[in-house]
Length: 252
Image (cartoon, rainbow, N blue to C red):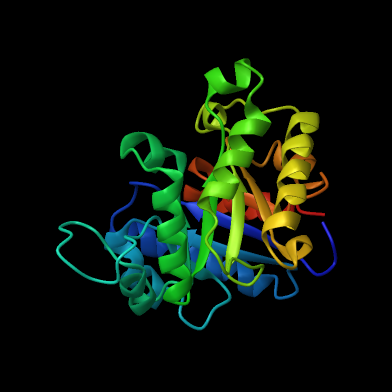
């Protein structure tokens, strides 16, 4: 972590929460933020699409940002059930997650599609959180670096920069399982991502690289202390105000 890269903590609520729940969670985080105005990190919550507008209105005027969980590569069109990046921006988003492993596996999303979605996010003025990560079989075959490098290079659009792009490394086998890679494994992958970014993005040293996959208040401090770990993409723990805030507070 360098002085010019503030840690970023992104809460991916996935398919959880109704209106009352989402507003209460978001307001709880806003209250924590107001009680700690000198906090040297950023937070964003990514609720389901049904809650984006309500959450954005609930946190208006605060430091808490709002993001979408996915976007369509087209600005508009005959795409039933999809949401465009421009629509997310209009609803109050500043970020959007693209290429999450659950989108890649559940919906067959390819690097090419993820790249198009990231480009759409940039075009709408959103910061794209581009997700990459290997499945367990690939890890067991020693292919982690190969897979992560391929996904990174295939998923980044032209014009990606520290201002419009965040990378999230999430080993798929660690998401929601309670298992995490060793500190050495995380450091090795993040170091490789940084090195690859240097060949792909101008100002790569300023691009934030998040770690995700069973991050919790008990393991976050050790993970966040590693070189080239600039925050976390948090799933289940982001659904509890105390846990999500504790993770953010554990950054160096």
